[in-house]
Image 1 (cartoon, helix red, strand yellow):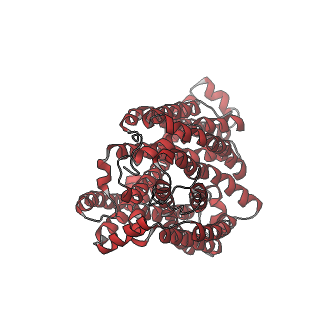
Image 2 (cartoon, helix red, strand yellow; image 1 turned 120 degrees about the vertical axis):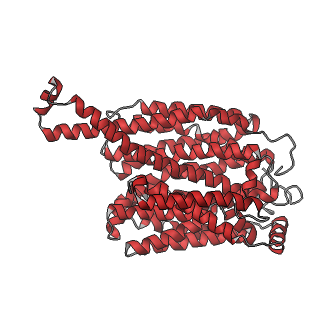
Image 3 (cartoon, rainbow, N blue to C red; image 1 turned 30 degrees about the vertical axis):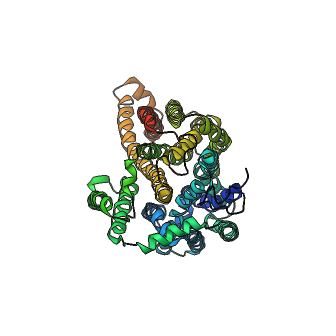
Length: 512
């Protein structure tokens, strides 16, 4: 595709360069950041040992990153407009890269958590800004293909994370999980500086925004309180005994009160840090709702499948990561087809079919058992992954229908927030439900091996400890499968929401 002229796309970041070159350049840093959302999961035990922390304390290494990421994500569009899109993006890349280096050098847990917070703040602004650049650099007719390319970043990276994390930890040390970001970050900064353009139209938006600037510091604090507290509740709910914990109850109350105040305050503010009025655009609201579900199914299963492989099938970190790799390759292979399909078929049809296929794939996974091999587990991920590109590309494209061009930054931030928030909700729900279902199945299976029954007497001949071990393992297996099944049913139930997605009209003006 030839580079679009500045006259036809006045907000394009390509300048005199080919738009696809710019797409590759800005995707580099975002791929690195999205990778970091999952790369540390399989190596957490090693990191905990390296910084002298217990397994429970070490979970804050993951939580701290997610909290700071959740705080900056919803305001990244506002910050990009205020600072300047290119300058903001480069600042985020630099902060993410530098804090990654310091994470690798951290001598204790406190230092590690501090730099993980900085890493999350830098990483939170990358994906929304990249998506905004894509929306401005490609004409509406080309956007679906562009978002297919972008989808490789945000869908394939989480699948590769556990595999790469396991390999680096087993082959070298956990430090390389963070050190690998240095060359990628340095290359991204250099390429962005020389190749990515800040067009005059975007500069004018920033200048106008600054001239009319009305500080929304209360909105910023409400966003931080709302999404920061929500992330703590979701990430610590199961480990801290849910609402039996005063800490969880306190954070939940702050979240609920802040969320209500946030909506009322931002609705009336002339320059809101979180533009809630965008949800008045029907297609945008529907796209975000389905994107939330995509996040729930994608990130929760990205954690559950390797966890299932390690805890119950006794795979090491590398082998557990490999169970996702085939699905990641399948998603990458389907991305071009998703881009082509999105230019020829309406979003509601592709999203509807994608949700049905995702639901059936997860229900199929729920029908597996503890005797499955590597191939069965990998293929269950493939069945789910082939649907994701069609969902993601269609949702991202439909999300911009009716959004003015100067609101693309804010729209991108909210769409990415929905995906990440869905991931946090999915992981939290899966973890909590897993504990409940294990208890339920343990009691039910325990009744079947009661000494009062013939089956119980036979099993007890092999020893009480062996029986208990067998019951525990079977209870865990059934619980994992229950969760996959529930998520599959949920995908089928929300399918009608797809009908609210709108198709860009032929010859539609850029961004309208």
